[in-house]
Length: 484
Image 1 (cartoon, rainbow, N blue to C red):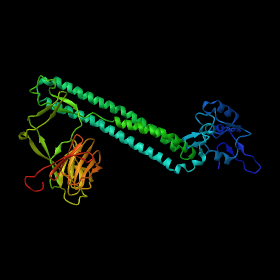
Image 2 (image 1 turned 135 degrees about the horizontal axis):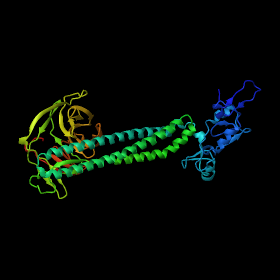
Image 3 (image 1 turned 180 degrees about the vertical axis):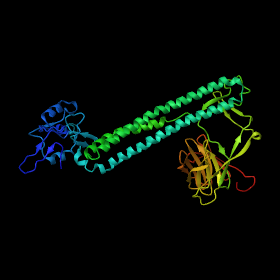
Image 4 (image 1 turned 90 degrees about the horizontal axis):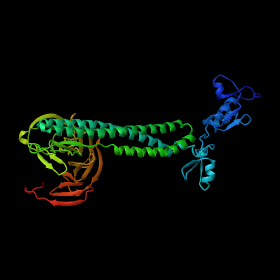
């Protein structure tokens, strides 16, 4: 075995000769006059003098020729000793850990501040540290933070696309409607376009401000990870660096939570003003732009079938009904059914390869522009289909026979199940099960209104809170005299 700076001569009577290691790298052989216990290097008199003058090594302890280490085994063993100095006692090396105060300490700290504490010697407790739970938990936390940051970055990018797409769609709607009115509405059109652009800029500015924040978090996390990886072969230093990483990691977790909380955009929709022709002098002519949380459109349920045929309508110039308040205008379009034209669109195959029986669609729910939920009664599943690709993108089994579906705030839906109550589902990304409400009788139809669920049962309609407790119920009669 050879150690840099150490040359061994053969023969039992010949003493070891030690040379200056920095000079030896430049092919200059000079005898060593000092040894640095921190850098683990031998120096000649010139290099030792320079080492004492440099700011970064001024505090290092140098042993002179009569006291410096010459034994190879001692030098190699010394490589695994702690070399980090205490930040408040610059000449003292960290050797102890106080479990009571969770602090890394030198001898000064222990004598002055931890006399009554049970203090561990780091060289003893760190031997099995790398294989312990604490280090493993830190590594898992780092991995989870990497995943969370990547997920957050992906969500921000999706929202950036959504902002641009929403802006484009609403501007197109506005301009198509603009063609149906006279030139009087040019000023209103420009005002609304400006408001859309301001909202878009506001969202893009917010989302743009989040990018450097999560990039900075990822960079800091990578630094911590690199520091820990660099110490994997030195368990003492690994112990120290892991302890030091705890608080920064907690700070990164809090910063990431703030980014997620701020990762929101304004949802808005251009809404037509059906009274425009009658109210040319009105300040709300052409329409208004409102920030909304888009509510899903309800779609009629289908019966026993393995395919869903999605119809597309071409709307004529039918009348509209205006719903106005003193502050803003909210409009609900009521199409003239006599002027609608229906054409067949692409069929969607809703029977999956794992389905045992024919599909029976008890109800359908339109989630967004291109996504629809289907309740498959025979197979006890809820399926999510993409209307653009006509494919099932996700499906999930529910613990009962699904019947009705309604939309809830926050990318959630409620599904009624015969004899099994009400199951909540999360619809963001892939479908996933949430909480479940148990009820005593069969559930059928369901709707959501102002933090309450309106549920129909056999000959009864009830208003329930979100925990399933009845607020009000009403018996209903069936004229036919049979179960309804």
